[in-house]
Length: 86
Image 1: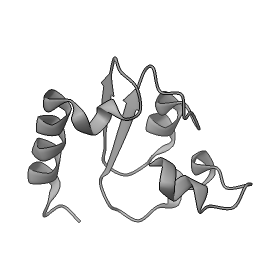
Image 2 (image 1 turned 90 degrees about the vertical axis):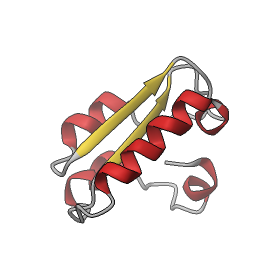
Image 3 (image 1 turned 180 degrees about the horizontal axis):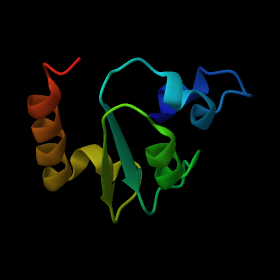
Image 4 (image 1 turned 135 degrees about the vertical axis):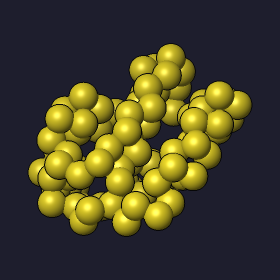
């Protein structure tokens, strides 16, 4: 979950508790292995999600997600592939 969105959630909100009941929307889980803003481990989320899901895991921090050209390409590919699946 992106940091600004997470700050607007209630303190007791935990994505692991709701990921299995999110609508049939395909989920992209992005995991920077050096991320300092850490909520639920991505592997737990991946296992708990029942809908179609994709994990983008990379060796970098939180902000690197969108500044890394390879990550940008992977996100674009994900959006193109799943744009009509919902």
